[in-house]
Amino acid sequence: MSTVEEKIETTKSRLLSGNLLVAIWIIVGTVGCWLVTPLFGWLFLGFSSFSILIIIRRLLCNSCYYCKSCTKGFAKLSILFLGANRIPGLSKGSILGMTATVYVILTVLPGSLLTNSVLQEFTLLKFIALSCLVAITLYAIISKLKNGNRTLWKLEVAK
Image (cartoon, rainbow, N blue to C red; front, side, top):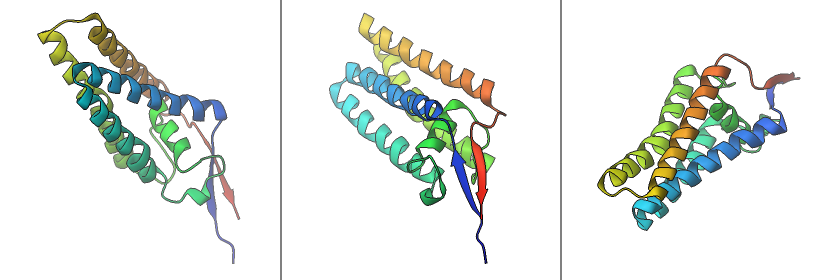
């Protein structure tokens, strides 16, 4: 009796670039929230890191032992951020929900705090943080539109 296992293989550059995007996005959001109030910065760092790197990553890959070059869902997390509409083992609804959650956490929360703060008291640092946040979000959206129907991984079936 043989079992069929799906193995996901992605390139190292795609794995690194997607996860680097996540890290930079979290850092920019943290700096933006910290510029408003340092307590907000620390709370945002903890909340976003826990939500994205632990909860969403775990939802993306709940059977890590099947993956070939993925470490606990980081390849699928990279694929999610680089814009694939399909990820093995997940429905389109799940992917859409995770993507929306990520954008709310990483863009809407710090963006609304920064926008409100800039409107109350303009400082160049807050404006730069808000601009960086918008630039990263636009890059992610453009990447999602560009790579939406492409397969960003190889799927192998082992017997």
